[in-house]
Structure formats: structure tokens, C-alpha cells
Length: 329
Image (cartoon, rainbow, N blue to C red; front, side, top):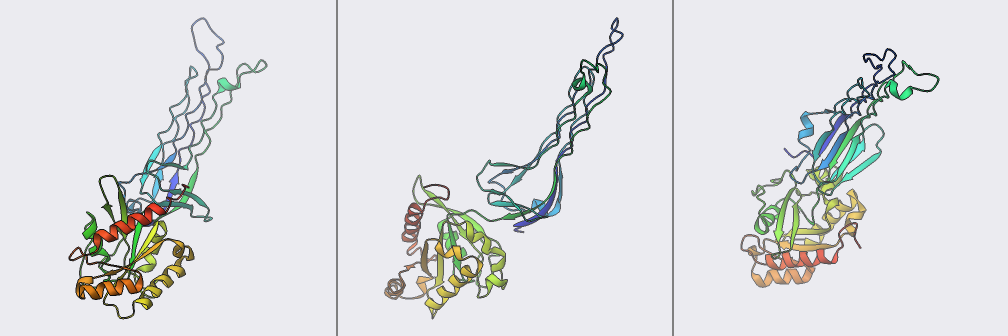
């Protein structure tokens, strides 16, 4: 199951209360206050882990609670801090407040930490309240409550290049041919029921991540087919690779439909660099495949025979080299 959305409750630990205590030592009948402070409550912290691929773990567990701080004790001893609850999330997780819709975080970089709910501060013990005029205070603070929030998590996969095309255009076959990914492949629509990422190697030092996005159909942006579920993942790609079956009678119309669906979802998608690829070139004579490619400014490939795949990888690599990574100049 590919889970890319979840709503959860996070509750940080309350701070521990301060202690009211007085020194009790032999020969010191009027010992002063020695109540220690309470411990800090634990926080709920998200950390980005590349080994986590989906939000599936959040489908069963809906409540995440950190430890409370421990009460202070005598001899000015502070209570133990509550343990933080660290939760692993996949790269590309967007966090919003489910109650008001406020954007809170976009968790992309591996190792990035985000405090989803901060633990409460521990209360002061009575030793903190001693003054020249009140040398035996019987006062201590209660701990401050930890933050509690209902959060909405949404996953948008992070990839360098995204394959966009109709069902059975050959996206899964292409991904399997150029990377170590092994998506399900069959000759019927919607074989791919979840986005799949594959690492493509250009040379000893250069690789890029290619994403197979489930096939679009006309009306996908309005929820038809499976496109509505997965169009969000196109937003993370640096470049787009439109894939059209070379035997499609009206290739221009097919490309227009794909572009219209992306525009309907987010006009910004069409500002991304894009390549047009004609797949299944083995189904037509070689000279005809190249003629089609020249006519549309496309790259003709056959994932079955390997024809054109090196050229395609080089073209994707060149396009990525020319497109700065977001956040760099």
C-alpha cells in the first residue's frame, strides 16, 4: 500500500512540577528551602529518513505522545527531563496544522529535524522563591503543559525527472530498463498503482533519480482515473519527461492532453524543462521511428531492445546539469 497522506495527533510532554522541600539535617533545626525544579517535558520531533518511503506507519498509529518531565525533589535536585519522541518521516513530507491549515514545514533534506510539538518547561521548586523576607517559601510552580496539535502530513516524492504519460505508454518498462527499480509491468491500464523511484547511473560519479508516475487520463486533474492521487508527486521533479507511444495516431493531441492535465493541476508545472520521448520504437521500422522523432523534436526509444536509451539518459543528464537544484544559484 502506498500511503501519501495522513492526519495524526502529537502531544508533547508536560513539564514536571517543582518540589516543596526543606533541608532536614542534624543540628540544623531551621534548614532552608531545597525543593528542586521539575524536568522539561519531551518534545515530538520529526526527522527525515531516506529509508522511509511512505506514510503507511501513520495509518495505524494516530496518536504520538512524548514523555512528561519528572517532579523535582529535595536537595535542589531537578526532576529528569522527559524523553523526546523522534518520528521518522520520508523525504518530501509537508506538515500543516489540520485545524487551521497553516503551513508548518517542508521536510526534504535527509537528517532534517523539525519540532512538531515542544515539551513544556519544568516548574520551579521552592528553593527558587527564597528571598530575604521570605526564607521559607511554601510555593512551587506546576509544570507548563506541552504543545498538542493535530497535524496533516502529505508526501510529495522527491525526484530529478518524472515520467508523465498515459497508461501503457511504457513508463514502467522504461524505468525497469534504465534503473534497478522493478515496477509491476503488464499490458493493461493502471498497472502502476503507486509512484516508483529508480536510480539511473550516467557514469561512475553521476546518477539521477527517475520517477514513474501512474498514468494520466483526460480529466485526471479533476479526479478521473488515478491521476488525481499522484499528480502532486510531479511537483517535486526538476524536469518532466513526456512519454507517448510511437504508434499513437495523433501525437500532438496526446501531448496537448498531458500538458493540459498538468496545467489544470498546477500551471507552474509547465514552467519546468521537459523532454518528449516516443516509446515502443521497435513497433515501427527504424527509419520511420527517426522520422517521427525529428518531426516532433522528440527522442525515439525502445525499452524492449534498448534502442535510444543511452541517448535518452544523456539528454536527461544534460537537462539536469542545466537546471539548478532548488535553493542554489
